[in-house]
Length: 355
Image (cartoon, rainbow, N blue to C red; front, side, top):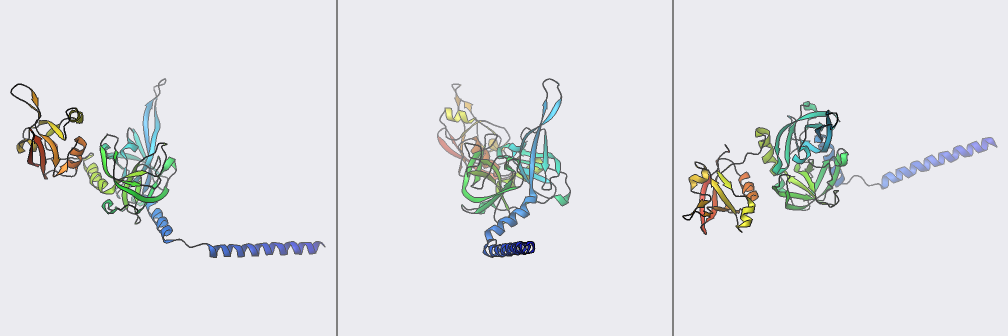
């Protein structure tokens, strides 16, 4: 009886194993292979995740009672390797107010970062780490001018401290504007429905070729978490700003030699454009014949030139004036359209370097 029961038990186990194997083989046959879309996503993640870093912002705080100085984690975000010299790019607001910045690479090694340059008006910061070249892998750069609504995009970052997290979506709109931490507008921003959450800031937005097309920088959300509307600074803007920050530590904007009036002046007097308070002698605007506020024969203040356009691009406030100038370099000659004494005037002004 015992032998019979044992044989039945062994037979039953064999049948279970055989049927289980048959089931698994059947399941394997029924499961589809990777789609081309999935294969593309996996490939991009594997290649790009080594270039994505974790950025920790540390501030120094003095204890009220002991007066000892402590290092306090102030915030965290994402970033990415720009080139093989150890340059890291992230958002300005990620490192704002930091006493020390630490970069964590894909292999969880930590490196103290040197702040190379800051551009608050563009929400871009450039850092440098002294890590071995074997640990450094730069992202290939794309062209954000070629983007279209509906194109696939991938965001890699560290939302809520969860490292190298991937989200996928599409370009949901182009040409958006968002406010930077300095109050300036950031133009031509990419809108995406790829989930972007706190901690994603400063991380890369990639196209289906694995190329950098933007820096994830903000979300629109009443709750503070992703609701499907995220924003990224376009890579074509980043390409112009990062070399300046590496070389000069700040944005180098060509100048005309003018002191524009504050925007609230223009609003107060219902003026369309940017009035000039002063024009600096021996600078391009003065040499071209532009003038600032002056007094008439009765001693009353009278507006001089009010800039309304540069190269036929409308100038509506100081932000638009600066944005247009940032598209130029010293030595460029621009056509400045102004209004003075209710008459339109045009001046050829050759921009110069700030002094």
